[in-house]
Image (tube, rainbow, N blue to C red; front, side, top):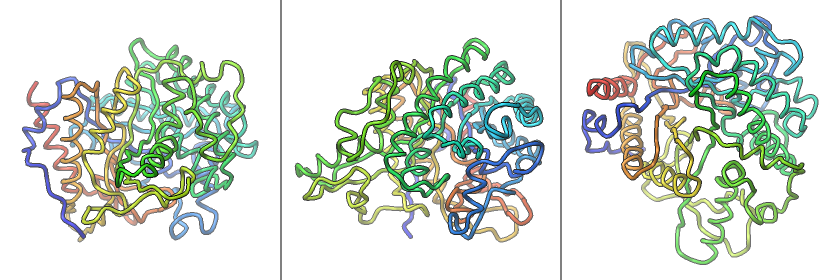
Length: 462
């Protein structure tokens, strides 16, 4: 285990690096925290099916109970208020609203999110809502899921339904969270729901996810109060060359297409990367007239999820973009429990690159955090110094990007609390708040106390 070194900036100094309209928050996702999967008319999602399938998740863990957030909203929002959060980013369970993915709407499902939004506002916390965080209704997957173009239209209908109910109170909308993961991990290598292993299907699923986003943006915007921000969140993997050999630079460019440009180019440039599908040794997706125009509908914000970086070394032969043989370990580097290198400058470099290459109106860090082995002794504290150092480093690096001219408007730590970490089950803890899954007790970790100190220092400047 390596020891992470904290930045030499004092917390109060760090707080002064951000403008007074900067938004500080934390984030979660519905299936990871809510539980109550059989209650109040909710229909099954692909993650209910996937996690209930033997061998798909760590020790067969499921989101059936998770953090029981569905029943503990009031207490959890009170903890957010205690931390001094400006905003909370959460996702909507599509199958709570439309148990079959479309058709008859479930009023009880919408009522839950209405209560959550109202409770947040009572505590002066801005709701930022993600409409899709990977939990597709199983009924739509039975019809082909994201490989079926009709799913994109069903999503736009669902998105408008939610926006009509909550749009007068929501500060920001994220249509999709990390569609790269939904497409490739879900349909390409099958390590996430729905567990399809067909790389060509991933290409078509990706196109339909992008289409769903483009169809939803104007409908969500029209149903929301004036000035509400609408955008999308993408996951990015900053890439660095291990050397300056020609094959390394070649493989770095191919890996960049796969990890970063596959979704960013269509959204901002209205086209897929040239030669991308050739490099993937796959066919281009079926694209209908006007699809790319719809996909590149202007957005108000780009959400950026960044955790780590990868260092790439070229291979003698031309590899496929997803070949793990490119990525080389960094000697003496610190790694999280997810085997992700801790490299704060990655987020600075990424934000600068996105600003220079794509010119989004506004950028938000919508996820950033780290999983470490947290130990609780049954008392009132959980010490996580490595996570504190992680946040100090990445937030300071984000400030450097902001000071270099990046229109960075907010930062959401991942995550508010420990939760169901998809295929990793409950084996990985990202939370600022420790959750004892047996008792559902919440304990503030040192990282939560540090974040609260940062936010208090920030707000005291007003």
